[in-house]
Image (cartoon, rainbow, N blue to C red; front, side):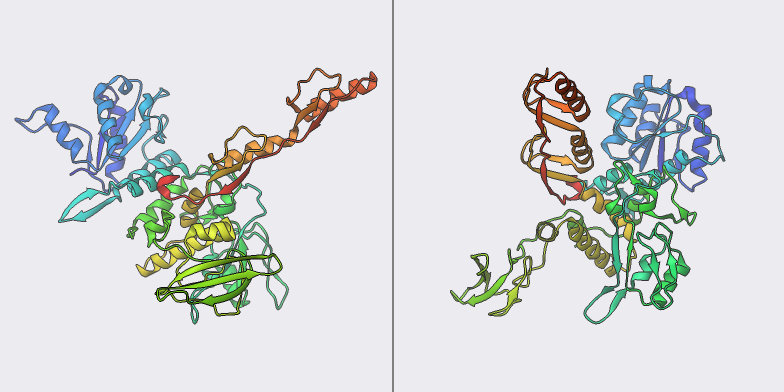
Length: 492
């Protein structure tokens, strides 16, 4: 079995040779220079090599785009989700293969530094990591979940140096009732501070806002008993595409702020897929609802408990100020978490059924839901003895939170219930600031309900007023309202 099968046009052999040799230097077995065993047909030998390869590398060039052989081999790679395309010439790749990110190696030379070649190596490494030993043979994990995780990873790159957000997440000690599982300072190294961090006793600044927290600073934070620090986070990055360097932090390879263009999603997926992601982990990343949803108070109120039948008990939550009450049936086999006469708060659990991520989203909002999923994932990985860093998880939680559902479209060209990309929606909302909708045309040339730029309306009305004519009247457009979503990896 070969690690990598290289599909190319014979006319490109001189260019393919250094690529193949460099891949072989990585310790991979490469099938690229077809040596046909005596007595075997050429077609059979290629088909056998293709079927037994774990990764199919297709070299697109002005020669190979004309080759039906290369297109067939590329189609096989795409069918098996193991296709890695590279581009040698400035040509248009066949339409059916354009959706897969391509490494551009037109000017690449062997032994030279190249971000594109590094990206190629990361992609191949990730695909090869999808193989697990079964009965002493290796086969790819072909399930939809793992492949979707890989697809999403390819989309995440560092797109700019600083998105300038003022938002961040607060890092605190991870605790049980009696122990600190992971102190806050151990999760700070390599991240960017969202605020100045001040040592309480001396009032000296440990790190300034926007500064990278290194090992020494993290140690000073620990020694100063600072239990909570706000840092820049991928979850709150405001880059419309990809993520910014400041919200990501340092590149572990260089210990410096990550460079723009770095494909950080692939590295995150590689770190996660080293471990068993089946079971309490896949369910979290799929945002699955539990078989028994949590029963929570929908408003503040006082509890009254009654035993209606031998199988059920009822909890009544009443709020006299709001003239509101609701009864919640609780199965007898479930343990009540509240007492008769107790005051409960909105979102408080009434029995021992755990929250689901979407419960938390609906009750407490996106930030708390994201925090819950990350903490639960950390717990599950810790059970395997694995230490997955926060930002690798943040990359995929950000993807899970990237969609919204329209509640009321307002004046925008959407439909109630429509699901949209959040970043694109926010761009469209931002455009409303400069628009007005005509309500009365006056003596202007506008039409009723016409959308116009504010400046054009102001200029036109100024002319009409100077001419002692009736100006147009207008209103600000109503933006769409929406619900945040937390979708599973395979639903994004």
